[in-house]
Length: 268
Length: 335
Image (tube, rainbow over all chains, first blue to last red; front, side):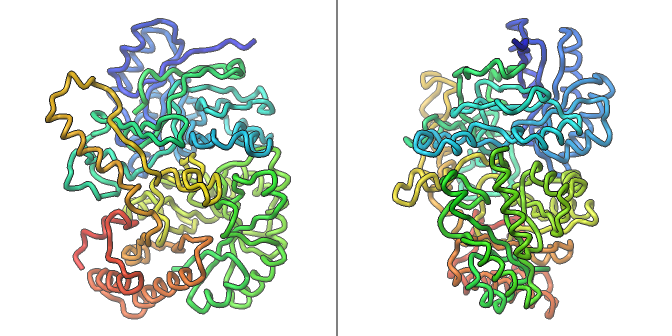
């Protein structure tokens, strides 16, 4: 039986309080997957580096998909991480961030983020799961790393960990090999994300019909929305530019993962 | 700049070329995929309309297009495939290559890697599912074997300019008409079309379903005053926007053609596999008219914007609407 590491995922320095409640975490995930506007700044990262050094735990910096400008901000964080905490992991959700890591940061460890592990997550799937052929069910439960050449590509590029959401339909990790390690995020799974953020400007009624890449006042830090429709087996949660579901059921094949990443809050 | 149009059958080739198409893209669905995966797409389009049905038909269409020097690109752009699908996937690609397609449009880094190793005599192009938001991502795909990229819908004109400037040697395409998806295609894990049209809750796009929306409880009702609750109720209005409009109600980005010409964009993509031929032709004529004006009349920016808006209204009987504008920043330029 593999040993299971527990990690705590926070997207804001204030959330370090969740670590102080317990000492069971061997690693801290820190950062943002969905919005470059919410990337931590360099001082935040330095504070977190001091924290993990003090607690003698591992650090994983989490990064989002980014524009050209966002990439520069990520680069500043990578420079600090590389200098002050070499050997740390970096979760990338953008192949551009990976390319940067690959070319310039041999001292950091790339991890394939859950946005690039493109399994289907919409809760409507659960309505058809018992009505479709078994090949289709296997598709919905299986990741792209079932393909040997995909695993070969990842390993050749120093990527030996892949991040997973806790899918309602379950995850079949047979035929994914042992060389690539897997992390499971609990309990919030992302479903979809956008740059046409409906939370931005949501408290300005005269701009209700505006949809675009709009200026934002970090309204996502004040309002979160619950979306219900009877066809959705789980409620949808819109926080900021992203829709999540909450799945607290522990999968039967938890032993196939060697790390659980606990999200005490929706990570936005 | 090239006009990239969807193509669903050999019968559409001649009329669309006469309308002004420069390049086609298409998909194909055979029964042997459909019987195993009735609700899972091979190419980001549900079963039903929008596909060629045989490689013989595809070959005929490709030959007809080649007579006019118009290349046909073949979509294999599902976000990912699993191991047991690969025999079929590679079979599709090889048959499409044999049919004479000029390139394969794909989204999955795994498929790109595998096709690169096969050294096929076709171009490999990354579709919007590849989520290229920056020049480093473009370089990653270039290094892995891609020669062209369609950028995601969710970029501003200036963001596109920076990516293109910093990515020499790659052909970029952008969206210009139809289906302004709410979410980032390559990161959207909703499945649409989980049934036929007889049961709309499973058929319709998940982003456009009606939802009961409330504030996710962070503070209990007792802790808030009534004024705050009423104010919050107004915030909810905006959250319903995609239930009240249709993302395919003629979204348009044609005002940005002016900038895209300056930037050096290769192609403008008209979304719409499965649209009726009449609509495809109308879309192509609309763009060809504007491109010809841009090339021949060399209008100023305000003149061009004005002519786009007039032609849009006369072609589609609609005025410009911010939420259906691909590049809403153009609306800040006075017409």
